[in-house]
Length: 453
Image (tube, rainbow, N blue to C red):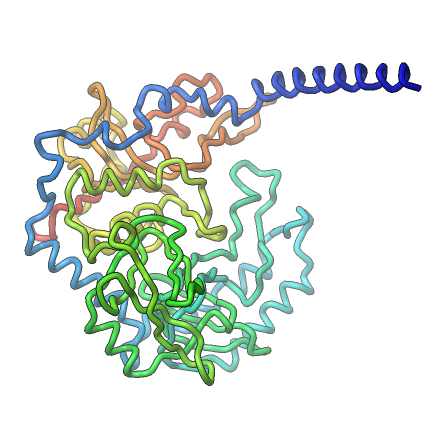
């Protein structure tokens, strides 16, 4: 028996060794391993301090009065849903998804066509005929996803198509951190979901994630100084050590007193109550931060490497959310999606230019740390040059490539990185010209300028 047992151990070890070698060989051919060798990720330093010039590192990027105006505008927009009668969208906007949901060839999480019975059930829960069944100011008491219909289940286009399937859930509109002012406009037919508006987006969220606010709460938010969280995953604990919320980078909180902020919780009768929680200065300085190259680089560094997350459904960020949360720390408001962000500031339209002409305009006009670079479905931040090559911070899902057999595919990146304007140029499989980012760039957004300058 001992001999047999010893022999079986040897065989097991040999099998494990063979499996390990096979795994290493497979990993060497896997998309993840290939992505790690992407030329731009080797050429461009993946830390933002490399793009900060020593002589201007702590020099304000905007005049003090302009940043002050911007942060006042940020506060006004953030609190706008609490203004009496405020609404940014019309009823038809909230329910436009209905026709698409009935007609589109969409799939569920099981990669099977979404049953028509389920689509109709979701639209029944929307109860469009009863809209609006509510109109009151409220606040999120938990982090919540904004959904296109009152349902948690994802909806995808055909996962076999390039750039479709996970994580591109077309019912995921956005996500909201705890402590976000909203306006409740409607209830689902079963009362389990609420249709809410924020200053940037609308959607359905679970009813327990929202609580109505009274005038005292509204006045407290308006009058108090704010703190801004500059890291992800910061627990806000009350005096008993209970975690009231987990704050993320870019979220703002009214200050109760030095070292403490006010956190909304669901109180008696379901209404919001504000409770004090500790927030260290190192995690939550006074809002807004001074806008300098060094300060943007420091916060951007904390986002580098974060996984791509369409609509923030799993607590991370996509391309537009990365920039929105980054600039929120400085009191600069950006909308939620890339197309809307491209309409901010002073715009330079590049769509009609050749790639060479686009490159010339970017080199001439782009201001490091204050220029957004937009293309359909994607947006980046220009951070300067490295060894004479323009560099961009962005949260990138992947690059368009031609797979074996001639079908279009994706070369996965899936995180926040620094690249140039031609990432993947060394790949034989990169689709050309449409897969080259420089060719797709359409707009520069100059955040350092105001219309009329």
